[in-house]
Length: 329
Image (tube, rainbow, N blue to C red; front, side, top):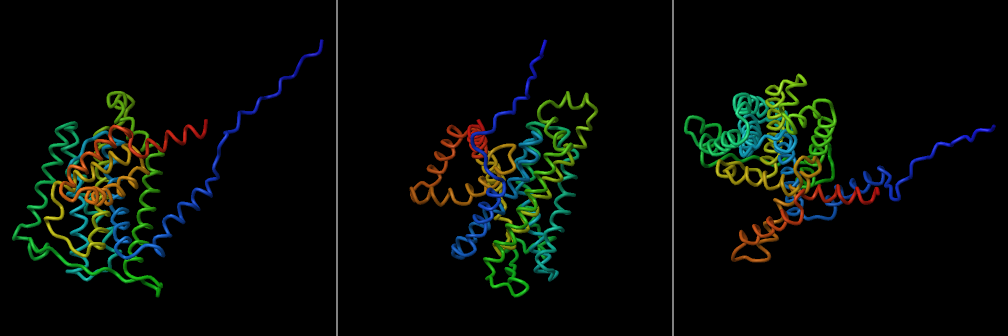
């Protein structure tokens, strides 16, 4: 008796598929177009948005992916900014050398603070980091280090010119430099979270007891994650000092830490790409609110933020994930 042969059924092809090369090409055009289309002030705003995106990414690593609430990342942002300003103004070092120096110093600072603080966890960690955000501006005004920090007067720096004879002005070159640094950091963060260590970091967030039962050193992973997060935020602070050309203690008050937290929530918690949307939100949305009402821009900003939380509880990145899932189906 003849037997029927069953041919393997190929899985259904997605109804809508986009070539990754097209996505990368469109993204590259979007990033490069402002160099030729935007004016100097608009380029400055976009540069600030990229800087905030880096800082929000750093906060997202420790809060979104590791589940530890931090309300003091503005302190690491300030530390990175002052490292850049002091190195450029007092030591006459090139601007690019300030980024690794800020990363190392903020990483050590984050590790030193995270080592005891992360053993507390939860609201205790939030209060500890909030205290750090309150204390750092006052420390920067201390007369004993005023010769380096400039005290309440702050420190002025000079924006770098384009090297190698590039036909770009200082604003165009700094935008390009910031975008390249941001792309490198975002790529490294993406690879980190896709690695074995990244899965361990998320496992601690999802179920710490189960992660510990599997043999993970929770305290060490939490502290290391906090240090890496502080490093990334410190680099963002160094870039901000170069872009703004000025640092002062009053620029790094507690609202800065809250702004980074807002950007993380709006962009998308536990999302790498969410930092980009968070950075755009915190830079441009206050201008939109002021354009709607000059009498009470804070009220408009608050209403827009509440509307975001109701309409997009998963942030902009969550909306994009849902749209991508529908297209794949």
